[in-house]
Length: 208
Image (tube, rainbow, N blue to C red; front, side):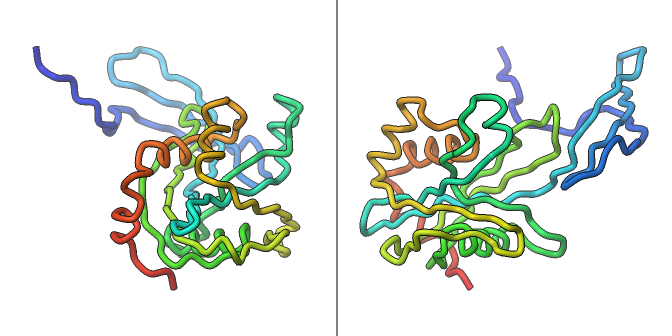
């Protein structure tokens, strides 16, 4: 039996639109989608988030990961737990490369400038509802310089960075204490690749 092709690939689809439904921080759009082999077109809505850089800050010498806390309305509405534990992340601005956004967001949300940044994987957290495309980076940092508060003042953002032993972070992951999708994915990657971190870090470029 032939092995199935498991890679994502272009769809045989024709799109008409968009119709702008709403505008806030991100546009909310409606499309008509005609798929090959289907007689009727589908109606689909999408939030146009775009590219996002996600950072997993690791202090290799101390065996610590840097996490942050900040308020998230969606988690408060869904779970009554809006004070989320996260990894730093942020939107890739127009004209910016993901690695540049990763450097900027790490500085803004943790107060730390990475020594090195290494691309590690990418994912779409909710492709049925959004075009958000997350690029993850391993950031080698000195957690000893961590401030008590951080965040981009021009965005009225306040984050509370935390130094956490890697064992403690992975125990929280295993216990189901974390709900922020990017943090769960980043720590799962860390659990799988922990023994290879020095080797992976050497493959990255120096942050500028």
